[in-house]
Amino acid sequence: MKIERKPRIFVAEDFKIEKWEDIKPYFDILLDEEISSLEQFKKWLAKNSELEAVLEEDMAWRYIKMTIDTSDEGASARYTTFVTEINPKMAEPSNLLNKKLIESPFKDQLTDEADLIYLKKVQTAIDLFCEENIPLQSKSQTLGQEYSGVIGAQLITYNGKEITSQQAAKYLKDPDRAIRKEVYDLLVERKGQDHDKLEEIFDELVSLRHQIATNAGFENFRDYKFKAMNRFDYDVQDCLDFHSSIEQHIVPIYKKIQEDKLKKFGFDKFKPYDSSADPEGKEPLKPFETGEELLDKTIQVFGELDPYFSDCLSTMKEMGHLDLESKKGKAPGGYNYPLYEIGIPFIFMNAAGSARDVITMVHEGGHAVHSFLTKDLNLTAYKSFPSEVAELASMSMELISMKYWETYYGTGDDLNRAKREHLESILMVLPWIATIDAFQHWIYENPKHSRDERKNKWLELGKRFGTGLTDWEGYEDARDYSWHKQLHLFEVPFYYIEYGFSQLGALGVWKNAIANEKDAIEKYKAGLALGYTKDIKAIYQTAGVKFDFSSNTIQDISGMVVEQLAQLK
Image (cartoon, rainbow, N blue to C red; front, side, top):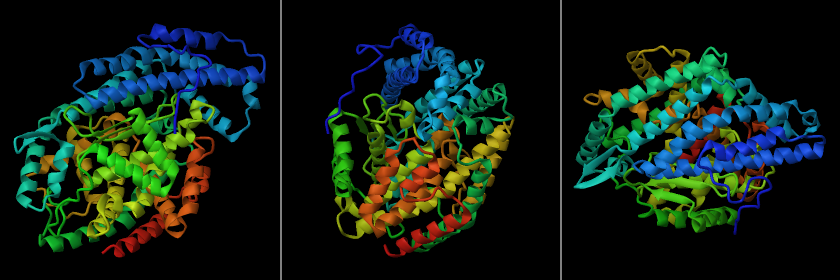
């Protein structure tokens, strides 16, 4: 499909952002504009939405270029300029625009559910606005950038070659235990050099975030963040109940899987460099060699699911909206960054030839399809959907694409092995999600905690949600600071439990696809195409599943996964 940016109705076509003064006139026009009819009000909303999209996209490209090469001082400076100089100056006029919107008498004539959700979000933004927090939020973003730089520089030298942590991960799947240990030791030593630095960054973040919360009138940052993230459809107790359900239903299943692996290994316990390896001594799966091959194979897989899906990725390839391979200086992780004006997102990841990279690619590809399906919605706000919906798109794509993974693995044992490993990883990650989320609740309910108290809480949660099957002797520091790898804790606090909620929904979509693939995909697309024009429960219902993370649901879903695993042995 050929995509071009739509002509602008308000912002100049040649608009360039170098400083706040370049943007200010547009805010002034919107703030001064007289609105005397519903028609004028809707046009004003459209202008406001366009400005928001232009600014969001400019910020997005700065972030993308900075994460592609954290050592690029120019890219880093351009991102920092936006975060520390431009963004803070937009806060007050943005708040005034929100107030103008809410105070307009024509606002009450917007009665569609999409508009009511939008107005609720705007009112929340007004409620949370605090001028004192502007520099604190800017500083918080800068610290997140600093974290990415530290992690991106964590390289090791193995076999005479400098490699990233992502590239090193494939050696942790090597059947030769000596190789696994050697690489793991190098990683532990290198990461250990940054423990104090990352602890300092996190200490400062916790302090900043607590101050942001108290400035806004909240007892703690957790309660502030729940409101800031527009969590209208569930509350803190739902999260705590989710933790308990995972502990009750998922942890025992995953422990049994790991016990079976230990028996095959012939070990009493794993060492931390053992858990990723195949217990039968098989070589790591190698589904592709290069990022280009990964992309081309994924386009083929998506095409077998639905031609629209492959068209989305092909368009991104033509436009150069992907950076897939792991390399020196690149920030960790992977993401699909929506670009609200052009409508074509950008996929960033650290592919190194592993099976895990295939999951990341189809995951981010699911996000990308979501962006395409919503790119023509009227307002930018409709395209900015809650994470619980965004992750439903990506996690469902992981599962429904499995039927066509022979493109990566052929038709032999490797195919079943890849599927089995993915399903087992879901059972593994759900307790990790509960661990990270419970950790965040404790951190921000206890903002004055010491580093030792934080470490002890982390170890306590490890016992609660872990299997107890790993011997950490000699690697205590690696265990104690293992949470440092979770970038969400540093960059996007409280954005993580959404993966757990969405995983349950995605398993439901997959269950539907097993029964009737065409119908399930049509419902999936219909749900995603809603963007944020309906509430979360309605979006899930349209997608053919329930937004339900009760104990009974988790028990039922986990039982289905166990049944599917049994068919792959």
